[in-house]
Image (cartoon, rainbow, N blue to C red; front, side, top):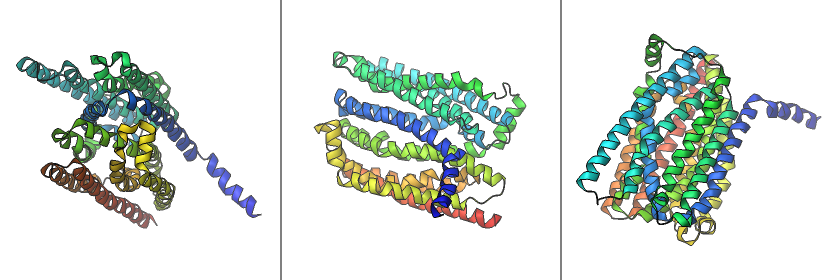
Length: 438
C-alpha cells in the first residue's frame, strides 16, 4: 500500500511539464558546458596562462557591455500580458541592442585608430583586433538573450538548449583550430580564444533564427506599441539594468582593474578557477531561473502561494551541492593539476577562495527572478551597490599590498556576505507574499 501511494506521488511528478522542461534545459546546458569543459582540458595545453588572462579580460568587458546593449527589456517578454506585447518588447530590445552595438563599434574603431597612429608600436595588431571584436560579441550576446526570452515564454526550452549546444560546439572547434601548434607563432593563435567565442555565439544566433518561425509570434509592432511597452517595463532599464551593470562591474573588478597591476599569467590562473567554479553553478542557475520565473509569475498572476516551491528549491540545491563543494575544497590543487597540467596547479588556491562565495550564490542567484516578479528591483539594487563598494575596497587593498591573492580572497568574502543577505531577502519576499494571499 505504501509503495502504491509513493508511485502515485512520484510518477505524476516525473511526468509533469515542469520536470520535463527542467530536464530539457539542464540537459542542454550540461551538453554545452560539458563540451566546453572537455575542450578546456585540451585548450589549457594549447594556450598559455597569459593567453587565458588576455581572453578573460576581453570577456569581462563583454559581460559589462551586454548589460547596456538591451537595457534588460528582454526580461519583460516573460511577464508580458499577451504575445503581442511580448513581441513588441522583444523588438524594442533588439533595436536598442543594434543601436548600442553600432555606437560601440564606431567608438572602438575610433579609439583603435587614434592609438595605433599615435603609437603604432605601443600594442600588437592582434590586441587591437581583439578590442574590435567587442562590438560583434556584444551584438550576438544581446540578440541571443532576446531570442532566449521569447522561447522561454513559449516554453520551447529544447530550442534554447540546442542553441547553447550549437554555440558551444562551434566555439570549441574554432578555438582548437586556432590553438594548433602550427599557428602558435601567428596572430591567429593570439586571437584564437576570443575569435572562437564570437563565432560560436554567431552560430547560436543562426540556430535561434532558424527556429524563430515556429513560435508564430506577431510580425509587426507599431511605434505607439513600442512606446507603451517602453513605459510599462521601464523598471528594467531604470533599476534592473543599473543593478546588473553594477553587479557585473563589481564581479569583473579583478579582471578590469586588479589585473592592470599584476602578471597576466596570474590573472589567467584566477580566471580558470573562476570559470570552473561558476560554470557548473551557471548551468543550474540559468535553467532554474528560466523555469521558476515562468512558473512563479503564473502563480502570482493567479494569486496562488509560492513559498513551498521556493523552500523546496532552496533545500534541494543545498543538499545536492554541499558534498560536491567539500570535495572540491579539499582536493582543488590535485584536481586542476590532473585535468589541465602542472602549470595550472596553483588554481587550487583561487578555487578555495571562491568556493564559499559560489556555494551561497548557487541559492541566491536561483531566486533573483523574484525581484522582477514583485517589482522589487529598487531594493535589490541597494544590495548590489553595497557589494560594489565592498569589492572596490577589496581590490584597493590588494593593489596597496601588491598582493593579487589577498585581493582575490577579500573580493570573494565580500561577495559571499552580500549573497547571504540577498538569499534571506528573497526568501522573506516569498514568505510575505504567501502571507498576503493566505
